[in-house]
Every structure is written in C-alpha cells, then in structure tokens.
Length: 188
Image 1 (cartoon, rainbow, N blue to C red):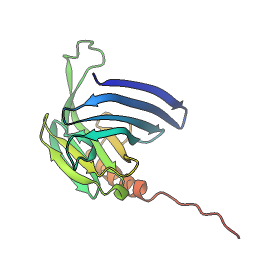
Image 2 (cartoon, one colour):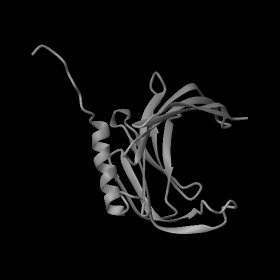
Image 3 (cartoon, rainbow, N blue to C red):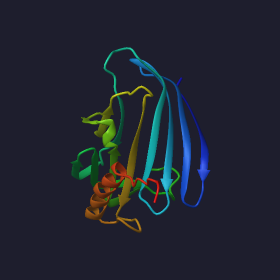
Image 4 (spheres, helix red, strand yellow):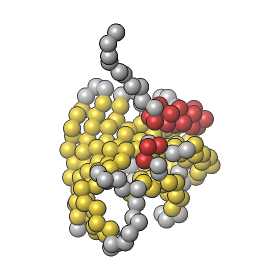
C-alpha cells in the first residue's frame, strides 16, 4: 500500500524543483516515510536530491539510509573517486515514437553518476540484484536526512556526448559539490 505524491515547487528558467513524498512504505523489515526534493539546474547535466525520512521504523538495528544508480546494462567503464562514482556503457532506449515500448534504439554510450556529500561519510556498496546497482549507504543522523547528486550524459546529447568528457565532468562536479563557495561579510 505504498503511496506517492508530488508537487512542483519551482519551475523557472534557472532551476526547477519538485517534492516527492513516499508514504506507508512497508518493506517487511520496517516501515518508512520520506520526502525528497529534487532540483534540476539550467545548463547542467545533474540534479540534486535532499532526502528526509519523516518515519524511520526499521525492525532491525543498524539499518542505514541509502541511494544508488542502476549499473548501465552494457557497462564497460566504472570508476569511483571517494564518494563519487560513474557507470558508463552501451544500452538501449525505448523509441519515444513507439507507444508499445518494444522498439529499442541502441546507444553507444550512456553514463550515469552519483555523488554523496563527503560530510555524510557514505559507504559504497555494490548490490547485484536486478542487473546490478552502485549504491551508497548513509548512517541516519538526528534529522534522518542527507543530500546527493545524480548526473547523466549520453552519446546523443548536445554536450558531454563523449564518455571521457562525462567521466571528467562527474569528478570535477564532485569537488565543487563538496566545496561550495563561502561568502563572509564583515568589516572592511
């Protein structure tokens, strides 16, 4: 009986934000509810996600929060630097002109990336279920929240249409995400 609801927070020229609520999520090993705020930015190949668990009732001790990306079906390159990772490979996409979804178009490079802020001290885990998933586990803090970033690129894109460029973008963006500019005002 898991339920989902979403609403648009901002839909502007520089960023768009949606809020997704997951309610009554019973895994058999616990019951959870959470709120996620996704933000997409103009001229970037990433979105951020701020997650906050409003109900966190695991049946066992030691349960961690987490996020992950699907291992690209034809993964031929995987790399991880700290708390940033990238999966690159060949894949097939459904044609948007085919309502049945049966017509698949081969794509020579599809890349996805995941970055979890260093401050959350995430732990990398590969989960082999459902063709494989690259994940990070995060200890639930007092407010049971954390942030992460999802990145994507593909050979058909206007930019980052070469796998090495996308890979470099992910690791460059990870450094920026973990070291935002700080402005301090004070006496001159």
